[in-house]
Image (cartoon, rainbow, N blue to C red; front, side, top):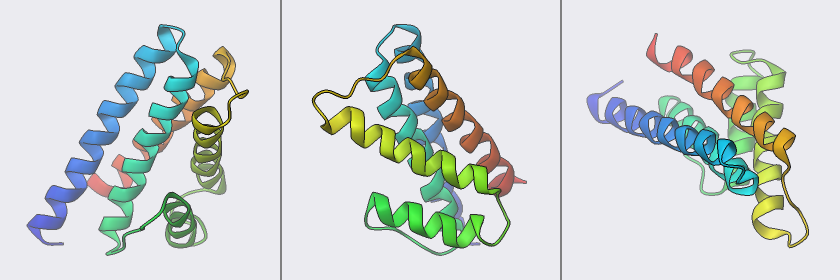
Length: 129
């Protein structure tokens, strides 16, 4: 892996860490919709880092889910529950961001933050070890 790729991977992981920190603060403040949204973007950047490590990019959020599942879940590099975390985070983010009557409660927000944290931890392990 060349140095430019390493720099890009680290930048995505730093972005993911920053989004997760914001999601945690929003959750603690009771801003559950935005906590869910930021948690998803934390996971999204972590997935983008993984895709870059595999020489891939996705032009859409759906494409990121698909490539992530094909390259990392179906191959057994990461477990099926990890694939569900990312897909669920994407669906939840779209729901709270775009649906006028969809609101995240404390439990949904806590779950999103927890799942995003788990995804980031697993991806750091996979990429940086």
